[in-house]
Length: 121
Image 1 (cartoon, rainbow, N blue to C red):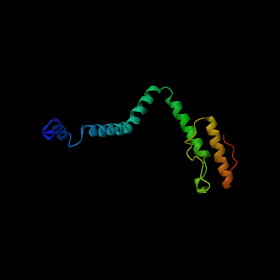
Image 2: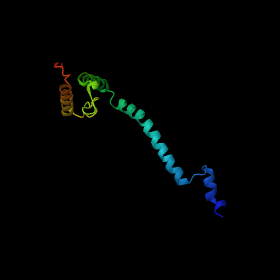
Image 3: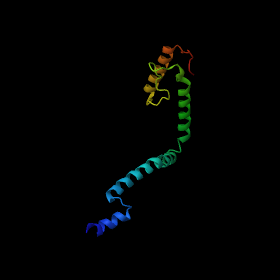
Image 4: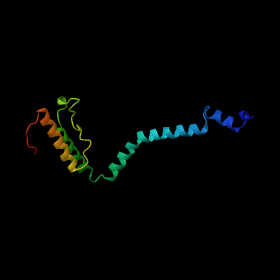
């Protein structure tokens, strides 16, 4: 009797899936699509909201990353016992964090014997 009822026709319309299972799968699918598309819209909103300071922000960001590239260690001197410290500077969150990063880079270079004493301008 249940096979001939409303539940059977609804299940047949949904490709044989339980309606709650299909809702859960569609929710996960929409989350994945939002995760992939979200940064595109987020970047556009940020660029529109802060277009007055975007040029200065880009210049400072570029100068900072050039400074990171100039001061980071040579990873060829690393080993399992002596891994390079935060090569890309991902953990830098403040000026104090940047100074800590510089000290770690210098300590690694001193430890490996590759320290070059140049004064940064």
